[in-house]
Length: 312
Image (cartoon, rainbow, N blue to C red):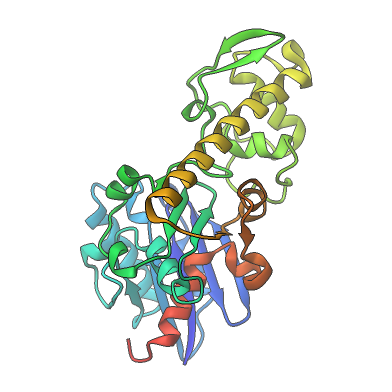
């Protein structure tokens, strides 16, 4: 059976086939071309295994509405699609268990091979911190409960707004509050710091301008109500460094807490930020073993789990 794995997030659509991995920026809140992109993967005899988190997008009145819309869109293209839920089962229809099951299918896929490890999936928007100790203990968890437990940290490599993480920076020795506007995002900080390239900056920019160093510096300057000419590259870089310092601390603290609570061993890292976070945490970058599939781990995982369960 030919199976493709599909992970439908609020901002990104990730697809893993037998030929490779693709990540499409596909924001659901902007009349996204979800069906059109999926049709490019349609071929005779292809079975789609799907997982989602996009039901939380604010274009939907509720998660259940989001689930129904996403399931309907997928089934227009793949009528026999199967959807993985937080009960670790595959479903053929829109049920509440489909909400935000993408992290769980990653755990389901990796639990046996990496038993006792801690999975850290550092993505564009969020970071999942998943103890691979017991699948039963993870089954049924919602994003609300994961936020409360610290296993979901809502910060990522590309889409996080800076004031969500920092409240002030030091410019020329002067503590300076940041402006709580969406002037710059984490992609701007990581681009300026050399953690990503312009090609890696795949999301929309806050001001709609180019994804390059010059424009990122200008956006970072706006965070302290300044022009780039006013604070210079040094000042803009100080904003980026302050953000990354706080984001790094946030993630390290969260990972440390989960390791302590669950007694996990080695750290394994996935997501588009795997290379960066693995260096910080002293973890193992799964892209060395899974290739680009590690960048789209839930899509990779839902395909693998479906292949292990023929007839699902």
